[in-house]
Length: 273
Image (tube, rainbow, N blue to C red; front, side, top):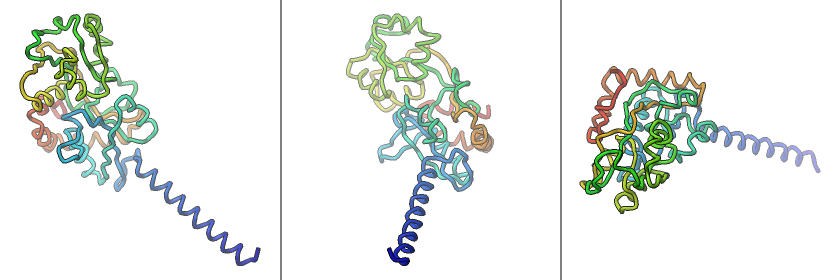
């Protein structure tokens, strides 16, 4: 081969290598930095069917109380928010692989303290039971022999497998669902007799679906929500916590919560209290 041909081939190899390096760098940035540095992306993993905390609105946009909080946190830190819907039962793999920077979607702290690095709690939550108003079931004891639904890897399921296992043992069947919307549809169609669920989601579903359903007065359990980061990622957690504290102090958290007043969010806030 002529010397000129060798030079040409060498230049091509250098350019090609540069292109691949540029693509690799872009991909790494797009999947979440894990640092939250100014001008970088902040990728939030959330369940897109967990209203009012995270869901798709009528315009096809992802929104919700938690996502609005995340948007404001990113705005104040100069980050670009990436809303990443995830399968809830795959959240650990998403977080540990670096695909997402945090789990921010009605994420229960209680019982998970050793698995994640959490912010301070910002919402007090409880697990409740939805039934058909005409079912005749007025308390949890009335669920004996009934067909009950719950979301996989949810706080309600954790309660039924933990402190309230004695209650679950009385059910005729306990069916696990990938999301609460599907469980509620089965309740509407009579496939289920009850659904064990977070109270905020329960309020949302009842608001959207009119009359015919009721929340039992007796609660399954109570808990608190926080933002969950990969265990040990205290640097990013601290940045988010500092901003959330500022938002609570200047009234921004309360203002965002008012957008979800129909679902009891303002009354559930514990940050800054």
